[in-house]
Length: 67
Image (cartoon, rainbow, N blue to C red; front, top):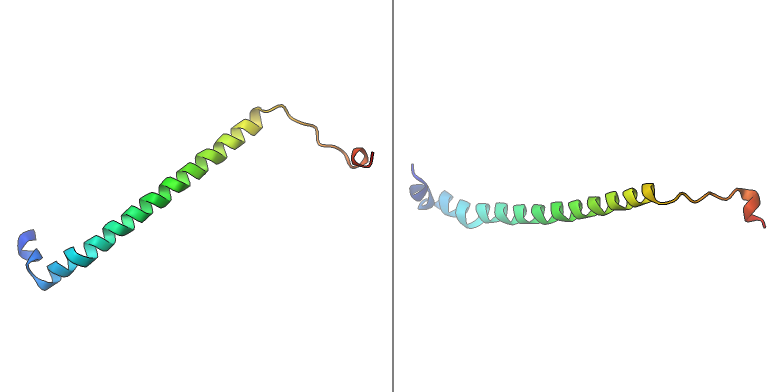
């Protein structure tokens, strides 16, 4: 059975009109979510890199805080 023959059946129409569209919409949403995740990870890595290369500030001891 060719794709064209399948598309002419009730099952084929349902697949192309609903199932394939649902899959495409889901892939679009997944792509959007992955892009947002990548952006967040890049920002986190940038912040970590800056923190590692920044001059280290000394952490005050509890006695220093009382002054």
